[in-house]
Image 1: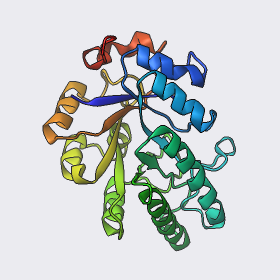
Image 2: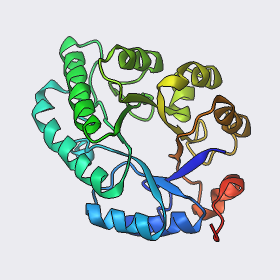
Image 3: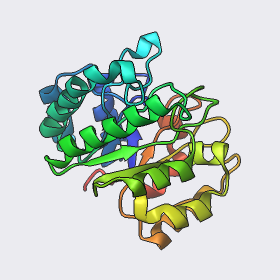
Image 4: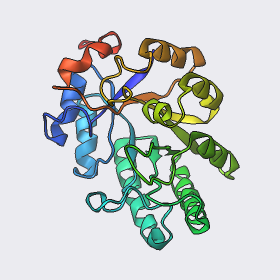
Amino acid sequence: MPRFAANLTMMFNELPFADRFDAAAEAGFAAVECLFPYALEPDQVAERLARNRLELALFNMPPGDWDAGDRGLAALPARAGALPATIATALRYAKATGVRRLHLMAGIAERANADSLRAYRDAVLMAADAVGAEGLTLVLEPINGRDMPGYFLNDFAWTADFIDSLPVSNVRLQFDLYHRQILHGDVTMALRAMLPLIGHVQIASVPSRNEPDGEELNWPFLFGELDRLGYDGFVGCEYRPRAETVAGLGWFAPYARSKAA
């Protein structure tokens, strides 16, 4: 059975971020993820996880100035000097919370630009070395250009080949079914082919990015396919609820942790 992680950046937005951990646990989730945990101190995140018996599945390394349009720094040669500090910040939170995988965002850049490509490879190797020293996995996620125009990493096959080319063993693919369907389609065959590289899975309906209960993809089949493939990682629920979060959790009811567990 898939291990679902509520994405606390996108779900339970009826509440302040600090209160979403409690809400996710009350709704039956045993794990959570988020884009960025940095609004709280590391010990505050750790306390909320512990009191709710939640596992933190994933979060992103600091992406630069998000409000100013930064979507990561890894492929930006002029911003390379900022990377060590962002990696160090992410590791402080990782050590406090017990998270096992961190996502490095690439940024807005042209992949055809040799300087950007070189900067990205250098950044990935730097981050992989740093997180690997702590026994952690680094994940890389292709993101579609409709949601994030100009994002450097926007092709699943290219990303898989890039990961295969690296001289390290702790870099994996973050396979978001929503982004895959928009970019390329052929979700099931890609899952089957890329499973050995996959370190994290995320879901949302296509095209609306709502609950995984309809639209273009057959969600019961895909959840079953993850089981058939033997995928034992987390499935992050990175979707925007149509209305109040709990009201849209009918799809999740068969997978929810019981209150007595």
